[in-house]
Image (cartoon, rainbow, N blue to C red; front, side, top):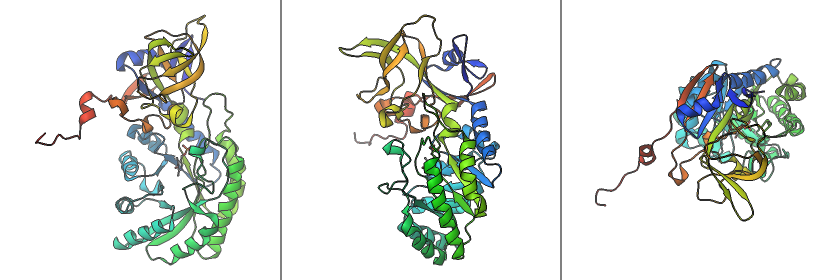
Length: 418
Ligand SMILES: *Cc1c(COP(=O)(O)O)cnc(C)c1O
């Protein structure tokens, strides 16, 4: 359920017409619904209400500080993967005691920053990282709370680029090495093992892979406790799939029903790292048709947004629903590639996609763009990054301004003798 709905053929975001916002801010732009964001967070949070839990929003899905503030106000924690994301989360007012730090290439500087902020824990991905965290913590005369990210070797049945819990994956420690690594960690004075962590992939559409892996890590947590470790957190990661077109995505309470029993006697707080499920369907990308173009074999709709604005179709062959912001009665359907101005053949928002005929100037909405949309955008082809707008009821707020041409060269320097 989300707050982007057509009324008499006109697309609304909550109480505002999308075309009116486009009139004010120009195109392309990202548009988010506050209502949807809050509701999605609450649905996830409430699904697990029977179990002590923390819902950490995965900042990489949508990093805008206004959105993080909104979620912080709802009680969200954060899952961060860099100093930059940690900075954003703190700036947005997220409680450091609800922040987990993942990622397999943490630097000493990032570790020190996070330790000084007093985060909930590090999710550690290798034995060398374990050593470095111990070292940095000792230098600061403190103890780093850690979980090891274990690789439970389950197939999440998703796109290979977003499967992270297979044996071949670069992420996590092999299950069979986990015990030994925990024993090493337990002995190191700068470390305090407090949790176990997994994250098996993204856009997963069934609970089976979660059930298998959660069973494995909750068994691991039990074994660690028997060794005298004070394991208080089981972090089941994220990856809960959502509906982009016609996928059937289980609701949060479906996962809760399947997983809660596996965790019930663990005596642990459950940590979840949820990105896409919270913000994905809370945002759209609005773009304008520039040209229709008939190639020898294909028909193209050239729009003013491109792969630098939304890379998911190019990177993952992801399919997003695309529809005109104003639906004309009786427009004939045609099969088109929706492409942007970037000089790459991979620059498309849709391929062989059935859509009503459109003309230059028409607005299109690219749905389900609230996760891994703006946060993966770039300036490729020296395209200024687009604004982000947040709607709340009848009000629209610019939560990120459109970049200017001057912004594009900010930070660059021409040597004096050139
Ligand atoms: C990306 C990521 C997530 C969030 O994944 P979603 O599919 O957006 O829920 C959670 N945890 C880790 C460690 C991640 O890398």
